[in-house]
Image (cartoon, rainbow, N blue to C red; front, side, top):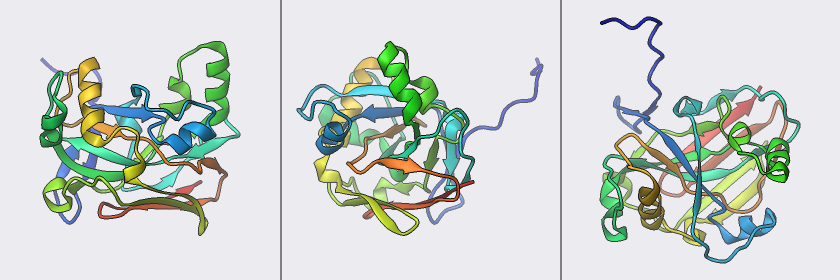
Length: 228
């Protein structure tokens, strides 16, 4: 049998220093996984169970570059995050086995239409249109875990037009990577190709057209985007 419409291209990420490509199956995101960010968003900084939301896989922007400023917002925010790429999966994965599922790590930006998110929150409606829009998930080239190890600490930072906006450390995550994977696998059957955005430190803020954003994570890589 043949497809009745053209097959959409598969979302992929480059692998650092390689001609290999990583196919993206799903994108999951962890909300408020740094206490200081939870505080700045008016949330509880205590160690509560993590909560998750998603982005469509084709929201990924491999390697960064130009990002079109999205419609229906005047308050687009940046959130730099460690991204986990799964090479394995399963359901109800024990914490002590979770890191064995990781293929590698990358730097990502969870772009957020903050004004729409606030409206949806007030109405008790889903966040999807505030988080899962076109080009809302720029991600750097993947660094295989066999080269980087599994980072549990290290600087995570973001600047806009050369000025520091976000600066933290991976050690500040409320739930570490293994714990995030274990919690998420209780909700969903995880599989190779899944990406997990693991939360952002404090300092999130607005972007405007023309801004150039650089961000990075120690031992993982860097990412640059421009709002056009």
